Image (cartoon, rainbow, N blue to C red; front, side, top):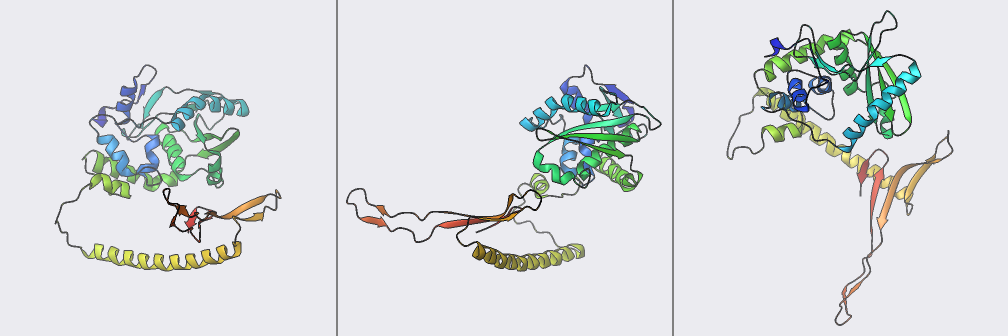
Length: 321
């Protein structure tokens, strides 16, 4: 099947169903992070299910996806205005010249202006609170995607144009990373040849994968552990003990912090740069419940509670009672 895939196909007049069908022919840019194990949102198993499905699977649309598409033109135009470089729509699905099960659908192509040749412009919209995850550079999931685009097209460079929230526009440049593909290509080949073409599922990496592959279990079935699995069991037992010890230490720290806060709901420090208070922890509670009386005779049927309840939240999302 894959040996007859053309160099590229035009998408101008392609229906949604046809477009989804062509995406099943190979690994696309949005699949790259998952196949390479660099995504927090999808796994190889998710991609594998998509590729072997008898009918193309379309991910249900949501507000984030819709507004990402609506804003794509605006963000792309902003990049062109700020850089002075010309971009154009690609309007095609491209296939790798020697590995036909690698494909890509580019947002925009940057017209060549120097000896680097043409480049790729990838457009993203993201929540403002995610900006911190970009401070050290392009997150790995997106890095895999843009490297995949360069691999398939043969281009040597590109830029990511990202709109964070309503008004934070950022640019991130990148070049083709040969080192990235020294192992990445092997993973691609293994995934496609040994799993997609054979329809043999890849290893489960998450609980979600397990729920899909083994949804029920067989009553009374036994499986004997081999030497490798006995090693995994010992490691799991060690991690369980370690986690229990860490939980006890954590709870002791929580008590110290709560004791320091006393009746306060907020623990804060002053930011040295802005002079504004920054919340470190919250310890909010509910008021004690009053007594309840019988509606017929007025006698007390439930005495008032002596204590309310409070919920502790440490900055970073670690919760405790």
